[in-house]
Length: 335
Image (cartoon, rainbow, N blue to C red):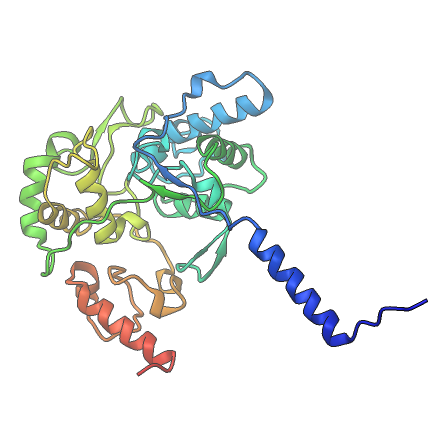
């Protein structure tokens, strides 16, 4: 009987051919889904079933919309007073975190854990929530095993339902403005504030309460500066973040596709608002340990570049970006 003899080279060739054939027949990698929040149905929390998970979701919705009542500085249980001001999470994450380009929660469940330059490490969603607690809410972290943290996460997961992992979400975060090629002008911003913002937030920027101090009813219109507002470590303290939020969401009822004010007005009024006194967060020099990844409009030193702190606060920002790119290229060994 004759035996077939296959050399090592022939076997390798056959294997390579088999791999190539499988590669030709294999389905192409799926492209990330694209989600447009303008066309995305807004979830209705009233439809959530009365189950243990459903009750946790509804508790999370209450914490987002009535933060001041449950974990604010006036909360009935002193041990639950995690927030240091009487804002609500939805003061920034509008419509209970569902409004496009108002830093919505929709889709966040699918993108965490994620790398964040502020810490220069991969962060969990729990850490992101507590970043807001310490900065925007000027308070202290929620315990990771607390009902409050579980409820927040449960609500965010529910609000993100059906958004696939890795999806590209149009409407996430904020929508950038077209930056003027000049420093922001807080004095001009004060005039814009008087014309556009003061009717809701007050001439003194202290907002309008739903009731009186101590009643746990929060604000109809939140304060924009002063002791009951966000501290200077919050994302909203960055001029470009605040300007983007203002242009595409303010006055209340504005949508990103029908703004009420222009780019220059938003740029200047954001500079005015963030020039007013507010609580200070300690250890801001520890943010962005990789200085080359520090945003151009982050106003606290140390900086990787030689531009002054005032330019980091008020702009113009393109020269800072160019300097950071040159420094990054040099660090990477590029010409």
